[in-house]
Each structure stands twice: as structure tokens, then as C-alpha cells.
Image (cartoon, rainbow, N blue to C red; front, top):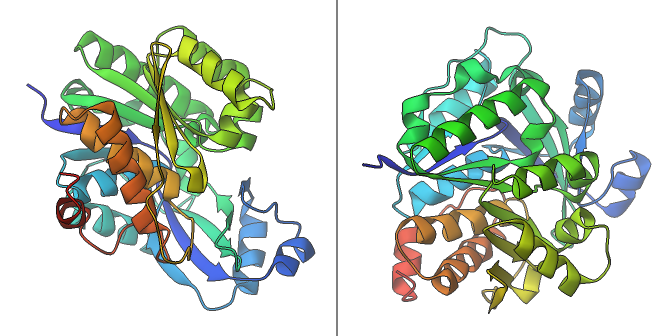
Amino acid sequence: MSQFDVLTIGNAIVDIISRCDDQFLIDNAITKSAMNLIDAERAERLYGLMGPAVEASGGSAGNTAAGIANFGGKAAYFGKVAEDQLGEIFIHDIRAQGVHFQTRPLGSQPPTARSMIFVTEDGERSMNTYLGACVEFGPEDVEPEVVAKSKVTYFEGYLWDPPRAKQAILDCARIAHDAGQEMSMTLSDSFCVGRYRSEFLDLMRSGTVDIVFANEQEALSLYETDDFAQALDLISKDCKLAAVTMGDQGAVIVKDGARIRVPATKVQTVVDTTGAGDLFAAGFLFGYTNGRSLKDCGHLGCYAAGVVIQQIGPRPMMSLKNGAAATGLI
């Protein structure tokens, strides 16, 4: 019997979100709309340059777990924080969402990861992430009974940066498949794909990963092509199921050569795109693990993404369960 719908695994990060203009990004050599990995010194410098900021627990897979719980699903999370103020914030926030989180924290060093997120007027977010305690996540942090009792175990491609996490992920895949469960990943970022293209493809082609989430740019980067149709054909051959988002054009789900297109949810104003892909995955996986059709899963994903981009921060401030029920999605 499955105890959890989805277990997510990722970098446990506290987001520090502030607004800026494009010139600020240029002046500080920040790559727009990407996740930029930084060291402790640069983290301190950028933090000092930030304007008024909002602190919120984030991290890609953490956002997905929180989204699933917000829908009323049963979610668990693995991720590493330190015993410091930001670590306490992260632990409180994710447990308050109803997510099972028991990963043992480190001591005080390295500190809990933080991401300085600069949001420009067009709603695009540029992340500058100091991984800190995240890099200490390893095989000893895997809870085998949680993996075995989760219908889907989902991890973020960003987690491929800390080396010890790779073995933990592979251990989870073995445990999940031995228990008859499924493994899923998100490609996370086109720059992340560029760093690990061959490894990501091997995870898919070997059957280590069953379900893949990507956006259009990541799919193109994965196959080093500018032909989106070709990228969809290739990803369909390389994994059991893929869901590829296309911003305001919605998403396309590919399985066994078939393509299911789902329109984006109409929004009034795009405020901040932080967490859009994470919440798409949350809606999709909530539907998938609760027996909904792939088209319904896509609609739930687009709905959740549409909610989160109309607010600051990556975790919805409203009930996704109530909102989806009101629109007839669940």
C-alpha cells in the first residue's frame, strides 16, 4: 500500500525575492531567466545589493511537494538544511504545508542554501543560488520505507550538481522500482541540461527515470536542436511519459508517440514566474497519482502554474484544492 502520492527530492533552499530592472542584471553579470550557481562571497555581495525582499521557503522540488499537499495530495520531501535561522524557516514552512519532512539537518556549517531571486518588470526571475548545506545531501539521507511507499519519486535536475546526491538518487530509483513504483525528474534549467546532457539521457534511456518534465527550452537543449517537433519525437522515444511546458502556449504531453496539447490557464497579470514549472509538476503529479487522465493532469498542471505566476513567491497563497474544485478540475 502506498502511503504517499509523491516523494520529491531536491535542494532545500530559502528564496530571497526582490524586484529589479534589466540594467541591474547587466551591471551585476547575472544571466537573465536562469539559475546561476554562486559562492558564499558572491551570495553576500548580491544580498547587500538587494532592495526590499520577501523570504520564502523554495527549492524546485520543495515547491512541487508543497503544491501537491496544497491540492490535498500526500507528499513527502528529502532535502538538507543546516541548524540555523533559514533552516528553521524551511522546516517550519514545508511541514506547515502538510509535507512529510524528516531529513536530519546539518550543524551550522555550511549554512542553509539561499537563492537571491531578482524579478524584472516582465515577471522573469533570475536566480542566484548558493547551495550551502544542500551539497551534503547523500545516500544516508534516503528513507527507504518512504521511497517504497511513494507512488512516484520525483527529483530535480539541479540535484545533479552536488556529487553525493547522484548516488542517493540512484538508490531511490532502485528502491522505487523494486517496490513497483515510478521515478520522475524535471530537467530544471537549460544550463543544467547543458552540464549533464549525456547523463540525463542515460537516466531516461536506461529506464532509471520513467516520467520527465521539461520546458520548451530545456527540451531543445537536451537534443541540441532548434526543431521543437523533433525534440518531442525524441523525448517520446527516450522515456515512458513526458510533459513539456510552453509558457503561455500551455503544455504538451507525449506518451507512446501520441501528443496531448493542453492550453495555458488564462491569467490577468504575470507578476512573478518563480515556481511556474514546479507547480505545473505538482498539478500534473497530483492528477497522475490520483488516477486522472493525462489530459486532466495537464489541465491541473497549467492551473497550478497559472495561480503561482500571479503572485510573488513560488508557493501558492490560496487553496489549489478549492480553486481547482471551483473550476471543475477536481
